[in-house]
Image 1 (tube, rainbow, N blue to C red):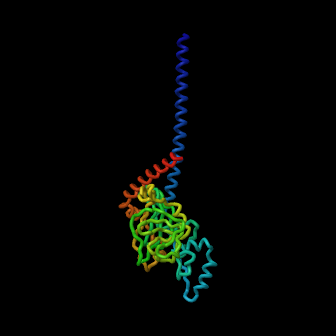
Image 2 (cartoon, helix red, strand yellow):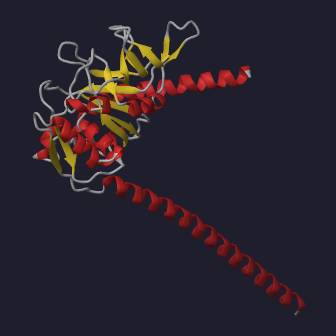
Image 3 (cartoon, rainbow, N blue to C red):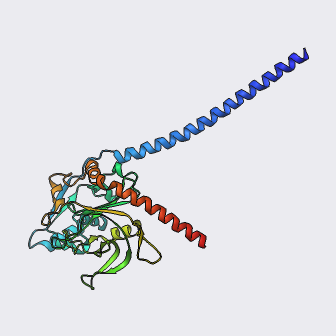
Length: 316
């Protein structure tokens, strides 16, 4: 009888332990699933934001009549704040110094501090998802764009090589940079936040006048704020200890498109708000032929920089 009671008690204890373990495992799975669900939901929301269809912004024009340009400019200055003027001028590929050159400006119906909403570039490019950093310069629409893992981070106006001294097109990579460089064409030209992309040609992007058309001697001109941002964003190349051999290239840069040097493509937005829009499909088509090369250089760059960092830590 005693033996039977002990057996029953033991079975009861084992059953209790089994149920308790099952309960704990269920709680852990629930917690794990809950965390996974939250992460998944967050990713879905971010994707929805990226993919959200936004109605194109419409534009009107602000005209500066001949003979009355000074009074019209005064009215423009009075009507729009400094921030609003910055946006309007950037959309017209002008900086503040050169706004006097305008005879007509396109004005968005919605003036927003988030310049990304005016982007002619797509918010995402799926086949760039494995590319950590990528910079584009479009000759056709006088603009640049920056992507991180296929997501648009920044865009802005640019003035590139004029017809007589065009910017070389194709895939290249950033190499060296200088916060203030001197032009090899004219020593009086000071180039802020210069980042070289064609070392043998001495061509890079930097701050300089944006007059509303392609005007440079092959370089890629930017607004000061954009040049400064890109100066901190892009990676320099890695050289060997002699400084004569490139071990790793910097950030990939693609200069593409054909410019009609006598036209202002942003004026087309008055009739068609999507006149300058580059679709994700179009950007993917542009990227696909060079994607393998970009990923190969990215892999090599990561390996070289990792070794350099390890050597630095060992020396320390």
